[in-house]
Length: 115
Length: 112
Image (cartoon, rainbow over all chains, first blue to last red; front, side):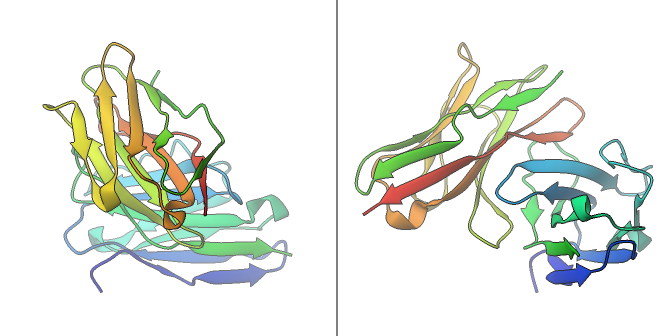
């Protein structure tokens, strides 16, 4: 499709398990962002990728969170040893490049529930 | 430090009445400002942006926003609200490095 695709759309797992969330950005978009959104709340920036540059990891809440972007396209956000407070919607966005005037295009998110 | 503020958690308006969602910003240099809308169980959708030029920016679904440099504001407006406009609205800004920051969001409720 033409938009940002995220999978799975929903994920339920037990506390302590690891999870992987996937994001397929729009083709040709070099900038990719991950955000976390708690129920009905604002967006919390997690990590940002721009081309081949080192990612901006300043928003990752703990060392249990990591992300990678292979081949400048698909990105995976991994949460290790999940905790109940990790329950949230994880949103991915991409933009054409890290130009100030480029809007971000969002996927519909992965709803993560930790039991 | 850069910041974006949306002072209202929720805005209630009757259908057919004007809708305003407030946003103020603090950004170094020239601001690049955006509005997004989020419907339930969906990602954010881009509505409009201000880069430079005319202070009144027109966007999708009949929305517009007015950039006011002296008040550092970028309020979202719609002359006549629809029930279908009920959603969560986010204001955002980019800094000189291109890093994006969102406001906390404003829930808009339009009643029939």
